[in-house]
Image 1 (cartoon, one colour):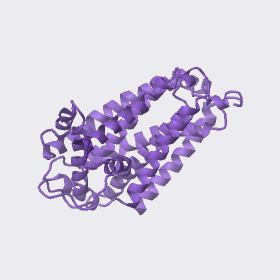
Image 2 (cartoon, one colour; image 1 turned 45 degrees about the vertical axis):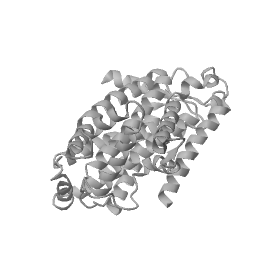
Image 3 (cartoon, helix red, strand yellow; image 1 turned 135 degrees about the horizontal axis):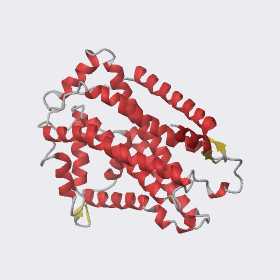
Image 4 (cartoon, one colour; image 1 turned 60 degrees about the horizontal axis):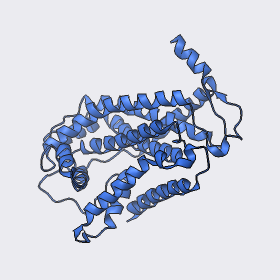
Amino acid sequence: MEALGALARMKTVPSHRFDAWYFAGGLTLFLFVFQFITGMALALYYVPHAEHAHKSIIDIVTKLNMGWLFRSLHHWGAQLAILVLFVHVFSTLLLKAYRKPRELVWFTGFVMLAISIFFGLSGYFLLWDERAFAAVRVATGGAGNLPLAGWLIKGFLRGGLDVTGETLTRFYAFHVAILPLVTIAVTGLHVLLVQLHGMSVPLSQEEKQGRPEPFFPNLFYKDLIVWLVCLGVVVTLAVLFPPEIGRKADPLAPAPENIKPEWYFLFLFQTLKLFPGEMLGMNGETIAIVLISAAILFFLLIPFFDRRSAMGQRSPLFTWIGVFYLVYFTVMTVIGFLT
């Protein structure tokens, strides 16, 4: 403990025009811990079986003391965790914080984002209602359209040919066992790398930055204030806007009309709608999935393509690429909400 205290007192954080973005990383970590705590409480009463899952959610909300609040806190905590993580990733992209020697920091952050989205999808499915069932069928079906390994990925996620009770059991295992372990490992590596390399300073601010600020107590107390404000927001949303519970899923029934996925999937949903059923003699959805996968892979490998930033030079091309990714994601998400 003394060593940790000494390390905290010695640690400093750069001070510059964009240093407010540093708080997004700590806030993401806080929300992850918050999700672990509320999720463990819910797991004590949830029944991961197709016949009982939906009823167990209703029992948690209606019969358990404060059960509705814990379920609502977990829901809104997940929404904000993914939102803050998107903010963190895009701010890192636009400020070129991925440049050498922080490529692995960027890679682990991207993996955390992917894990968080899978957390959202798997937790959403545990409701076992019509909307969640249709969303998982579409998501796993889309993964099945990937060339070569698509059928293998779809079968692994579903636990069979179609979305069934086996899928529910599998997603429950992902949500409460596999993903938490992977998250702890990747987050631990990410935090360790940040401590080793220090906070990145944007190229435009290297000559303008002020005197480094001590992490403890200055930045630590500021982090605490941000966390408390975020906690207040989560509690307020949980109390005023508790999430609804849809009708129990029926695997044999058609998907409800005008169904939409969660907001962090809307940009993919809208992109798929841009493609016709058939293009150039090929399945339009397959082409869309391949293009989306290529765009995501390019996003992941940006630190290795942006040679100018790696050499400490301005890189306006990759700034515009980052702006394009951000605008596309935002516009498609908004269109998905409004249409």
